Length: 198
Image 1 (cartoon, rainbow, N blue to C red):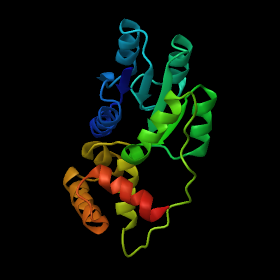
Image 2: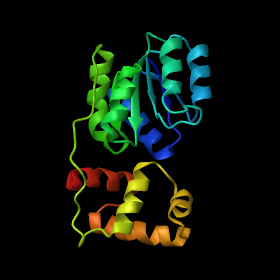
Image 3: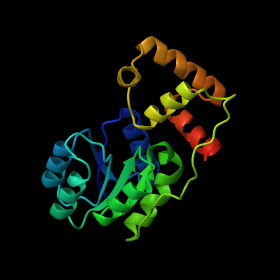
Image 4: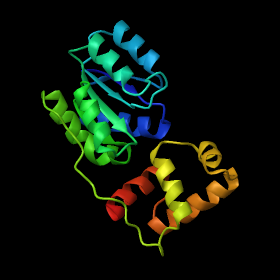
């Protein structure tokens, strides 16, 4: 099975590659961090059975990149790994041809099932979630802001710019978030947020 993993978030890309390696050890996998490179790989290595991609890739221009990919490679199965939890975004992705949609913080838990369904010719969509309702005693509003921006795949510098604070402040907030959630890294924090705040 020839597969392309296209994601500009290194941590998500690494976890995605790990899932594929564990469940499809004979797969021939190519990785990249841009839409242009992904399309080039798919042309050079045609046919590609599966592409697992971030809809926020440079060059995607919303879902236009997905439309182009589906138009050029209609036989390739496509799973999106997104930081968005918006039902309208999921619906639009499906309308434009995505076969699967997995939340970025649920890659380890849900991507295996998504791949099984999609490669068997079906679809895999995320289960609905309710609004986040954390206890104020656990995470402060600013810590929730940090967690939300983590979900967008932003590095510390970008988070600092978005919130108009220093990177040192962001790191301090992250440390408190990790301690409160009992985790050690970003992906674990996002998974725990889904478990506790849904």
